[in-house]
Amino acid sequence: MAITKSEALFKEAVQYIPGGVNSPVRAFGSIGSTPRFIKKADKALMWDEDDNEYIDFIGSWGPMILGHNHPLVLDAVLEYAKRGLSYGAATSIEVDMAKLVCSMVPSIDMVRMVNSGTEAVMSAVRVARGFTRRDKIIKFNGCYHGHSDALLVKAGSGVMTAGVPDSLGVPAGCTADTVTADYNSLESVQDCFDRYGEQIAAIIVEPVGANMGTVPPKPGFLQGLRDICDKYGSLLIFDEVITGFRMQADGAQGHFGVTPDLTTFGKIIGAGMPVGAYGGRREIMEMVSPVGAVYQAGTLSGNPVAMAAGIAQLTYLKEHPEVYTKLNKTADSFFSELQKIVDESGRGYQVNHICSLGSMFCTTQEVYDYETAKTSDTKAYADYCNYMQNHGIYLAPAQFEAMFISAAHTQEQLAQTLETARNYFKNN
Image (cartoon, rainbow, N blue to C red; front, side, top):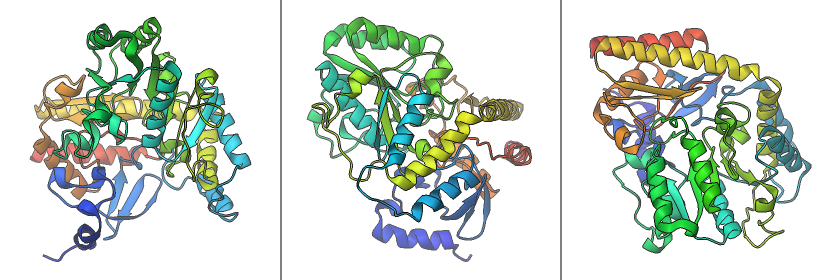
């Protein structure tokens, strides 16, 4: 059997790149396959180096909410690229982006641009510690907040399927002040405060768990975190790298009506380009250098081309709220139909979703936290994922990643995806 271009590229890549990929979530090892090397994308479709066409349900891991190559975004990128790719100096477009973010998210008075979600979270935690003059933070089992040392403790995402419980190379001292609690359990959070009380600088949480698969918060959970933080003088950080500007214009915090002190964002504010940001109340953000004593810097932060892309996408979303209405309605219908297909198969699998992100867990148990997510049969998911990939449906090559629907997905493409899933469950 002839080797494919993707297989040949992977064979070459492993000689020069660890594991042949530049991020573990791109590896197909957990589904017993090799990566499809993508050469182009448009709207809701992608094509690999062998010219296989896929309906894309990753969307660059979330930011392509309008689909690939949206004309407004593409035009903005091309226009700013002509002016120069990077200056390392202040630009007016950085100010425009900051004003736009602050206007869309009421909890944010000031915002600082960075280059990734990992950087955003790492910086927000540092600011929280500086503002409160406390060291300990609480994170939740199964919530992934990037690969900075202090937060790589019982993380979700690729860590759950990579066979690495946390990570080598992280000194014990770096995680000594990281306290873990159970997602959706206010009791476990209160236990942490009973032990450490006013030593806790902040709680950091994905308002919707999206790195142990999609795990929505139970009613009252997020408000309970807000109340506990208020009681103890700790800060509440929402990691909206996944949910920010995806669930609605003001993110998960707007959807659930809970106001955090600090918020982190990822590549969605750059329409998929490498960018991130963190922001919050003025008195907290004025702790950041050069105004305050919390140092954080980034030579390429606020890259003008990335800012142009992000402004184009966010402005469109702000001016067209009907995008969210239609998208979320479409996603509700899609995931409900997927659950029906699974139910008809007799497998008893669980389909979790909220707004336009969701996951199918290969378990009969309700999934509401890290431990219940881990009951999923990853081998069963691998079989399902490989079938879907081989039939032109590009799903995340790992059980514990979310599935993203974009405004570019057509009803025909969604129907084709459901029919492919139906065929899988009928014949396997």
